[in-house]
Length: 225
Ligand SMILES: [Zn+2]
Image (cartoon, rainbow, N blue to C red; front, side, top):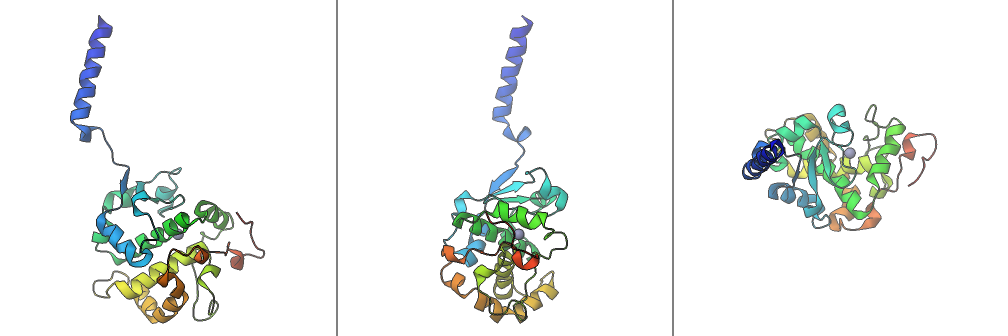
């Protein structure tokens, strides 16, 4: 008898849950918004299948939440929990830096969808300390990297270059929350345009994917995947 009662109670509970999904459902992932797709299309045009991309709350051993960095290892963007909760739509966000961040992560989606193993590239840079003082991201179009082709940069530098071009040409200085970065990007906007000239014409070209595994930062070329 007890069993029947508890079973009925459970079934009633199930009904309640189904009629009131918000009482138990925690949204831990979402699709891109229409505004985010429009924003990304400025750079990536139709080279990305945007319907496959999700924004995910934390996940992956909680690395994004602990490190306060996003990760985009398999074509979806893992955000730290607090950023996932705060930013519902990057295209509507007031902070220019969040839009730049979004384009950086979408560059990893672009790399992944065109065939780059972004997870292994990230691990390779990580175990060699490339993330410890952000040296994996640095590039210098004026001196050290002058004349380099886009595919000669490592995968983090590629994402930086694309997001900095986006900042220089598509975000206004008015209300920018990081004017020092914006001014730097504007100062180098012709260099950015030059290194991206093939990408800007045809972002679907797989030959543009990074062929640099981080070797310029280490004493020897790291393992290739
Ligand atoms: Zn990155």
